[in-house]
Image (cartoon, rainbow, N blue to C red; front, side):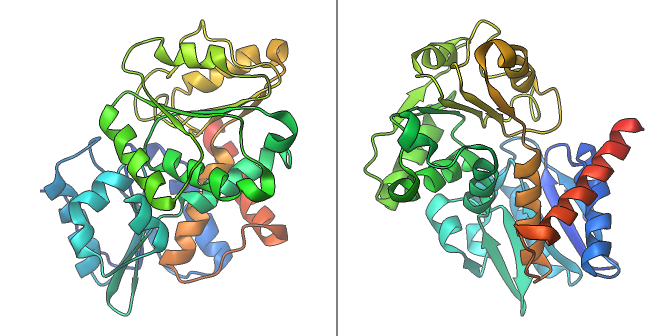
Length: 321
């Protein structure tokens, strides 16, 4: 049994693996004060990777039944949690139903609602650094390492906007587990995408390096595996050369961040744009917080920029401690 105690004030939960290390524990109180939420708090719930279904159900049941538990953001467990507890939700949004994952848990009039926010947050984050119409102008590729919910969402964002922004020349997705790749293939088929995505099983060390070598210049390489945060290491080895004039994006912003460091070491020589997961983190959290507290939080403009400033200040303060 998990140590879940009834909330004494409106409480939002962070369901993850190592939640106490996240900067959100310092950022959320400042955001809540700025947004006028009143007396509320955030608590972490740590679960093991691919935990037992009954533990996911225990967490969802607690949030659903506890009056002052107002909702949660889910990372890492987005797919496993919904698989285990789908019947406990009263309503799922379109993305959650389609993608088989839930990153936002909220409540309304006694009903438990689930939503998948990654297509929104990954899209905003990608657009913040990738040049407009990059695919149409460059003819470059995308290589996404990892086939979890964040990868599915990023593919959906890119392919759903291909008429407007153009599509990559090739889209590769790799994963150590074949089962996740098959799940992803089914979801993309349901979405009706006709783009020929290449789903590649990469169980061995160095398997991803071979794909990196095939990428054209100006391509985007994404670490969506969780390696470097939820687990040690990187999905590529130190011998892998990232594409010239390309983009390296690590979905992580904290932890060992080995992939990020590998990319930064090559940045000058390979003329790389290297991006961490900080903005992705901000977009993701603000999207879910808006659901949980039933507030329309802007993701562009001066109000958003102020929220970014508040988060960056808390991040800097934590680094100095």
